[in-house]
Length: 299
Ligand code: GUN
Image 1: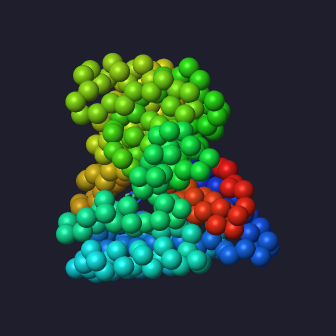
Image 2: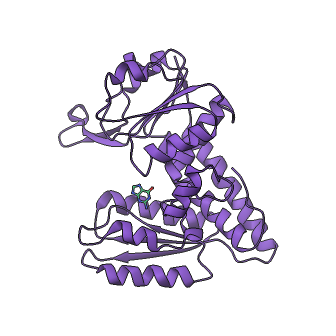
Image 3: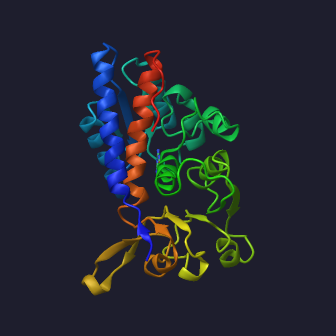
């Protein structure tokens, strides 16, 4: 059976380190890290994520600010708020929760965030830095950054010569994940819905990352014996066995079968999920260190 990678415990280690770094920053007389989270509309899942981000920010000792805006907020109003946050010296990180309502151009909103406060790592400047290997100054998107820490716990920092397959090509996870694995010297393939013979390709992977948003798509037979399997998916599916109208969370990997073959695997929940918020805190404290003219801490 595979080693179960405990994302909750690694995330707690990251948050502890963030708390210590925040205390050090205050001791040096610098401004404490400030994180602004902006949510537009009433999407229930987004509300849960945002509440959790704001709560963890407070727990870390940050200045935590949340803008909760109604679904009919105009693009102009939102851009004005971002402009104000860009200019606010008490704020080091700005996160606009996605998705945004259809009448707002999400791309335009993201590109309006000052790159040095873009703790989501979605601005073209940060995407470009990651793509060119400027990892010392880039903000890397939180979910792939957190997945990478989990991979390092199993495989170490240098992944030279390992084959990595990333299933999914989103800008938020798949593409940045592939770039991080490439920077760590993996041979990387990005697979997607048009890939031929995905099971055979997946079986070549020493590191297999699933980020497609399809419940239990990656089967046990797709996994190379001993592989490290990182499941980024969080899918809610009906669970009539728990009672009428009940549901449960599953990943993009058929966990029970894959765990019989893999060397190490992340569970859902309790794998990548907790890492996303932890890395948001890590990016925000890093931004505050840079704003204070101090060396950026690493995780
Ligand atoms: N919605 C789902 N994941 C994310 C994320 O990582 N950042 C933001 N801003 N919105 C999201």
